[in-house]
Length: 473
Ligand code: SF4
Ligand code: SF4
Image (cartoon, rainbow, N blue to C red; front, side, top):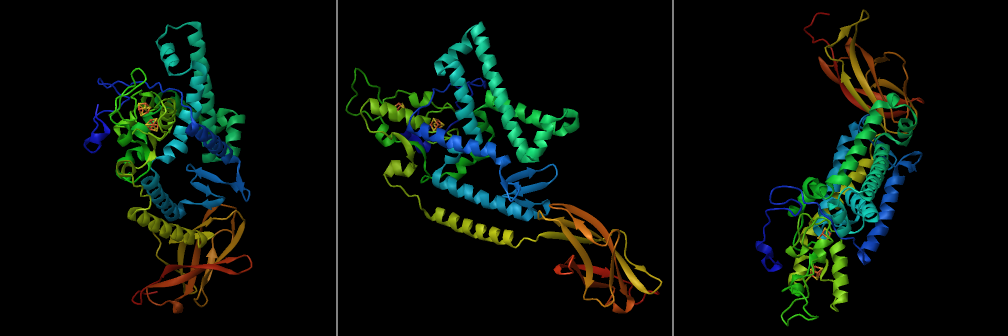
């Protein structure tokens, strides 16, 4: 096995969860305990409470977060967003992406260990239930190898039933973020045939979560998660990560009869850091793609160091450079650059949010229609119009052509547009302009949007087409 001395030359051609024949190696991590684990339990309790309570939280009577991709309605922090706000959502995603890069360059995969729902559910919920029912790593291994006795059947059925129930709970929560709590309540309380798509969605998510947490497990982080795959390009040698102090630890040497040689490093090669790792890696080989920063190896090694009377922190949060040279550089030029870009993006995003129109109007000429001439000599153009109410208030609106003498704007159907809260409406209208007012074959005109008190809200540009001067009317 290579050591940290060959860190920079180290390459890896296999992952610890797949054997030489390409078969899955099932990981039985030892039960973690220690100071970091206790802190993670508290953070997990807070974050999971927030996750489960989230769909019930309201801002101004609206959900805190609703991502209804099916009806293309989105509510973020109580503000409604429509596909028409795609630019804002794209900007928000870019801002988040830069934030993630900045955070990762500075603090490595802290997100994975402390906040990612996959790790929290896997290590803090499902794994704990497994320890509770089947015992620690060795007992689980023995149980799996044992013949199917009554006790084994009971334990396995109990565990899988609880896993399934928790998966159901998670899928209901996810659906509540997608279609809203009220809709989920309807799906649950009424016949499946009345909400077939909602029911299928719930079953689908339950199946996925159950499969991921009962069987797929760490493979989600190691082989699927795009964030995990990005670590190779995001981490730099000044990034903080769970790091083995090879300067202090090597050469590793087992304690024989209570002593080690004079040349021995601090690592006593007990391999407990490997046995406790939920992704099955040896952190002493250096920072690896599989490490989700769960801190289990830090806790167990601190415990070992305490027992052998050596200072804690042989595995700790540190940067590669801080271990190698003893110098920590958190604020580097690269970090400063990312911070500046992030500030610029946040400022621009805030401005765009504050100046966002409450009513979005899209006016398009009706396809296939150029113009028509009325008996009184006026020229008419037909338009399609779409209104999106991006507020939670009812709106009564009127449209009129402005700035053209004797122009008449006739809405087909009701003349006043009634728009419900967070609602979209479409319609058609005709603009009639006297021939003498036309300035060329095509001219720019302005459509005004007024409220019910005839107060101008906004104006929109469009084109009006008439006959050319050569055309006989
Ligand atoms: S737990 Fe600590 S002492 Fe034991 S093998 Fe790992 S690094 Fe070495
Ligand atoms: S190497 Fe340590 S921190 Fe990383 S996943 Fe394994 S136990 Fe967790």
